[in-house]
Length: 312
Image 1 (cartoon, rainbow, N blue to C red):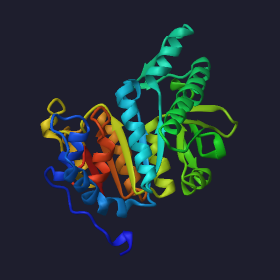
Image 2 (tube, rainbow, N blue to C red; image 1 turned 180 degrees about the vertical axis):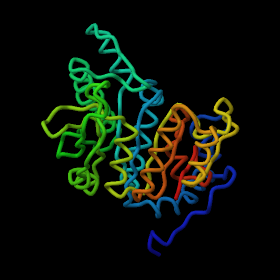
Image 3 (tube, rainbow, N blue to C red; image 1 turned 90 degrees about the vertical axis):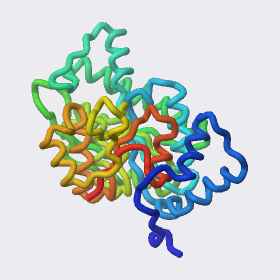
């Protein structure tokens, strides 16, 4: 049967596979050989469905700063690539940028949650994101058995932009996307690692929000999924209670929750990013907790997932 004809069941409670994956992630119970085989067998519909499909993963938060979490995320990406799924990793690097600004004596400034990026700050942002953070991730993926290629939005005119607000300095909005280079890389089995530095018409570097960049790239390349890794479980009716996680939302339900104040604060731009990407053709968007072990695999390869899935 063709892969497209395989349709995994709708989300429900934890499956045997999910419990087994959690055990492998470090829970107290151990897997016997039968459970190990069951994990592979039950994952088959998902592997068939997403083989050859592109998944854009925005990587950030604690999963970038905690070395054990970083190691798990990297290995999960390599696993996805190995079984025929085509991941694209999009990253920011807020904590790393702040550390280097401090080293050179520049005080970080923020306006409404967005970094104010003057010329001196932009120089550090570009050096840290494109040089240090990007190449570090490329090395980790390659050492784990993947075939990563690092780039930024400037390369191949992948991300063009314009200044968002003069008060924010060189912070940009994406105006156009060219996925030619990305398409060539994923089609040849490589894992693109994209630092979110774009450029304007004059070649000036612009600092672009990583969620926004990931959404625009996912829509332009026709991704099956956009996955935003965060430091929260997903969309919850009570942000302080992980037990109130909403596992599935439609675009209309998402807008209603924003209007009702259930989705608030920093979750609003993430949900809006997901909604926009779906409106532009991405099949589903996901907000997951990057701190949870193997949350990326759980979201893609299990029935109930690991966070909130937003669909049309």
